[in-house]
Amino acid sequence: MRVTIIYWSGTGNTARMAEAIQQGAAEAGAETKLINLSEGVDEKDLLDADRIALGCPAMGAEELEEEEFRPFFDDAKPVLKTKPVAIFGSYEWNTGEWMIDWAEECTNDGINLIGSLAAYDNPDAEAIEKCIALGKQLAE
Ligand SMILES: Cc1cc2nc3c(=O)[nH]c(=O)nc-3n(C[C@H](O)[C@H](O)[C@H](O)COP(=O)(O)O)c2cc1C
Image (cartoon, rainbow, N blue to C red; front, side):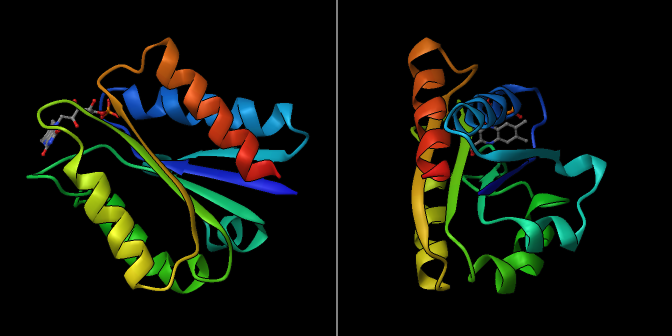
């Protein structure tokens, strides 16, 4: 089982969630790959994954980050539809509406969404535990 975690993070909060998801998946016995989208991602990374976790904080006005994450996500949809996907990210200004919209978009576009997780600001211990649990779920 190969779990690939791809995230965008401006100030590190979503990155910390991504690391905890990786930790959970690895503890459950999966091979893992953690990719910072800003450093580049190959289509092969998507194709090689059995399960994918995508991370992006709330940006714009309850939107996905538009310069890097949104174009990546739109381009990746044909591959994302072929495997189980979880989404996650951090927010601060509102109450997590972007995650509800993002999950709805995934479902409407035919992506098999097996989990979604929003964490307030710099994820606290409870949020990190939830990330670890999501990583374990992805590895099942
Ligand atoms: C340009 C910009 C737009 C943002 N828009 C929202 C928003 O619409 N809703 C929200 O709850 N937080 C918003 N935030 C706050 C971020 O989601 C929050 O700081 C988050 O923890 C950043 O995660 P990161 O450290 O992974 O970049 C915004 C932050 C920035 C810089």
